Each structure stands twice: as C-alpha cells, then as structure tokens.
Length: 322
Image (tube, rainbow, N blue to C red; front, side, top):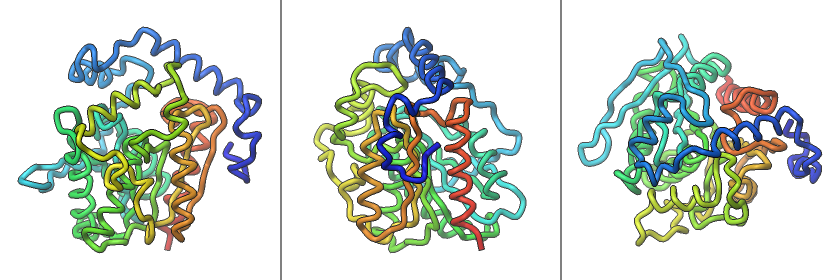
C-alpha cells in the first residue's frame, strides 16, 4: 500500500485511493456528521460517549490478558501502566495513546496491544497519562517521561528483557517523540531500539496541511486541531518550543523510526517533515504513505489498515530481533 517509493506522486492522487478506502471515509464522515463537539457538551460527557463506542471509532473490548501497574510520577503523582504481555517477550513496547491530549485512555487500546504482543512478541505497556484541559502541558508529557524512566530501570526485572521500543498514534506519536528527546537530554538515555510514530502531530504551531485541511469531518479537521491545541497548551507557551513541537528539536541520537501517514490526514505534513528531519539528523527512518488514509485509519477494518498495522508489527519485530 505504501509503495516502494513513498514520494511517488501517484500515491497522493485520487486515483490511488481504493473503493474500499473511499467507502470507509464516506462512512466516517456520515457517522460524525451529527456528532456533538466535545467543547460544547463538556469533555467528560464526550469521553463517556466515546468509551461506549458512540461516534465513528469502533468500540475496543477489554482484554482478559491486561493487568495494571502503578508507578510514581512527578510531584507524588501516580501513573498507571496497562500491560498486555506474551510469555518470554523479546522486547517491550511503550505505547502512548492518541486523542488530542484530551480524549482516549490506556484501557481503550487493548486490541492494539494484543495485536502487537502477538505479532511482534513484545510486552506492551500503555501509559494512562493525565489529560487536558484538566491537566494541561506539561502533565501528559511528564507522565510519559515517568513511564519511560521506570521501564529503563525495571523492564529487565519486570519482563525479562530491557530491549525497549516506543510509539503511538496522533497525540501519542507526538508524546513518544517528546519522551525520546527528554530521555536523551534530561537522563542521557538513548536505549530505545525503535519508534513507531503513527500519524503524529509534531508541530503545535500548525503545519500547512493542518491549516489547509478545512472543515470536512473526516476524524480531524483544522478546527479540531486548534481546539485540542488550545486545551493542551497554556496560552503563554511558545508553540515552537522543542518540548512542545518536536519538529523543532535537535534530533540527533534518535532510534530507527517508522512514520506512517495517510494522504487524507490533516497531519500529512507533520510526518513528511519529521521523517526528513529525522534522517537529516543522521538517524534511520522509514516513511509509509497510505493513499486515502484518514486520520485514525488504522482503527478501521480494511486492507489499508491491515497493511499499515502489518508494517508496524514487522518494524517492531525487526528492531527487537537478536
């Protein structure tokens, strides 16, 4: 689906979009057409509706394999880690969920964690980080940093392996990049073997594709990006601070990364730009472009999601091999 050349212009044309993918996108737009806005009905109400599977995203069943660990965060805060692990894992995947820093939760990721645990033989550890607007920046990044510090110290004892990977979707990809940079700069730790960064938001000052996407309700509109950013970031924060927008960070000594993005995603530029900067800083990186993929497309059934998820599983398995 991604093609041997991710910069092949044909991948970005309407003709490259399969009828199945177009049908999925049409379904998403229809399912979201009358959905209330979270900032109008209240974020708590919206979270409850989403947890019940209302809206466009499929309901994620809870895994009987999941367990939770409570660790110490900053300033006495406790952080919950949700774990789905195979026997004798070959590595650990620190997963950070998406949701615009406002929505989602670790306990809504179980099917994803089960898939990666099975296909890549990794112990999957998803972070229940604090959400905005109740807990704006830097609360969420601080919790993800605490989880990474804990794994760097305890993965071998807890899971029998200290081979670490990291990744997430959307805001989770953003927080993964921020965590990698914090671990390098604040803790001198560059021990992650790979980063799986799926349709991430890497520039909080808004890339051209974010600004130009418009109002089509295909999961993520320009307005949604603005509302999420305003909820997450206090007004005095510089939106190009590298701790806020990792696109502007020094990116030396980063692990091999896979950037996955659909061509119908408002965050398209974020992955294109970040992939280029990752390589320019001397790191290994792959770019997987999926024609017609909307924001969040990996959560919907179909060939496009299957191809993207297999590419991610294969990447994680490869970087933790040996």
